[in-house]
Length: 67
Image 1: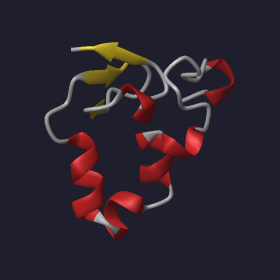
Image 2: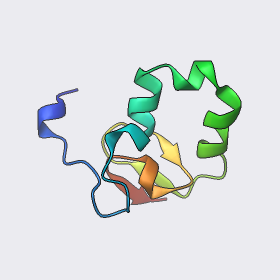
Image 3: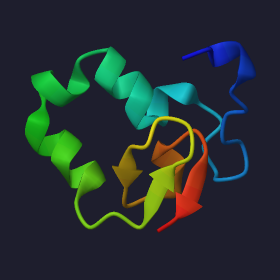
C-alpha cells in the first residue's frame, strides 16, 4: 500500500491516524488487547475504502464508507 496516496479521514471527528484500525493493527494492538480491539469491530457499520477493514465507528477508519 502506498500511504502517500491515502487521504486520511479528517471529517469524522478523528484527525489522528492513531485512532484508525490499520494503525492499531500495525502496532500490534489487535494482538496485545484482542478484547478491546474486538469492541471496535463488533457490529460494524463502516468499511474502510482503503484497507477493507470494518468498524462500528467511522472515526476508526481512514476512508470510511457506510456498509
